[in-house]
Length: 426
Image (cartoon, rainbow, N blue to C red; front, side, top):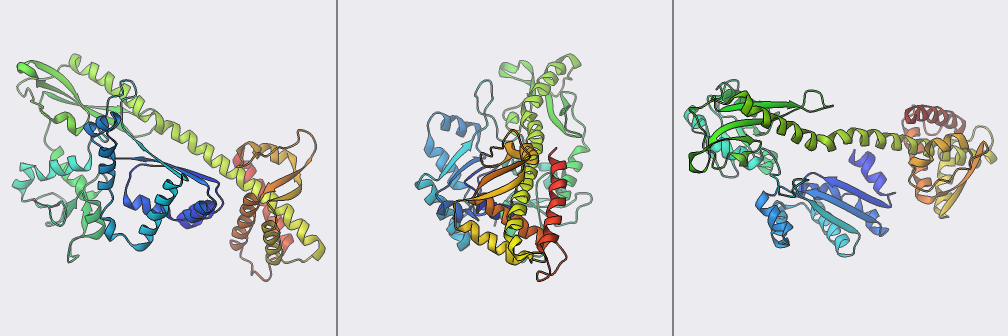
């Protein structure tokens, strides 16, 4: 996708906006690829990045402590001195873009939408997983051993279905690089890894005490997705009995279970209602994402329709003097050369009906006459380049030798592709 989609489109882009879930050096490396063309044209880029920040850090940052934010983000840049040259050059480019106003970076923080209070960045994050694994007396009794060098990892023993000596880690770096000697594969301690899931299954064999109740709420519109919380009867200040909703690892801090007592349905019901409300709020963006994805795909198909319409017209115009039998690739090179000579290129005789269907989705102000069957448009150079590239990719996919591919064959193929994309748009 990087070389087939991102880099070709960045060479044509006039602005690039991106949301990234995490601020990582690997993200910076990937993000920097292809931006030289964007920077060379002095075009703008905007990033929104997430950051793994504890609530106390978020509160301090919101209060104006920007140094704390800088310190935490710098801590996420895994040993810059060890970066390969390409990554260092990419980050240098991004720094230059920031300094000259071509790149704007904002950090998204987790807060309650109603109260503004900071929220834990994840219900169970990697430090919490490591704390649970390394601090478990049960796992130690089974023979599991925790180590911290060259990074945090747990050597497993006594886990059903897991080979003796298997290794789990919460370190992304250790997971990617492996242990010295390379004899043992390192597994990542996250949901979906078979060894980590086996550890969870082993713990799951123990039932919950009567003072704890598991609650699972279905996410509307998302099959088989649940949000899980726990109701817990515990002792608060002065030993007073209270029932708490447990949603995150941090909710366990200072928790003193009332182990001799049992929860009633009447006590659990209000917490379940609160969990349902939180589920609706938290997953609202995910539900919107499906709609946004459909709209993005529709816009992409519309752009393809426009590209094919433009290149079909330009090929017909340039091939006409050569007569029947004109070869595609020489004519395409003529079109590409013509495009580089001017800021805009005239595409005449485009079907107005088709243009009206896609005009609102295009990357420039495409004004189509309200009447008439044909439209004449001045196409910006970057859009004309995209049309040439689209034709080249389509021709490369055809099982025809380059020296034998004729313009009329390509025009027929373009017409079929336009018809297919129109159906996808509608």
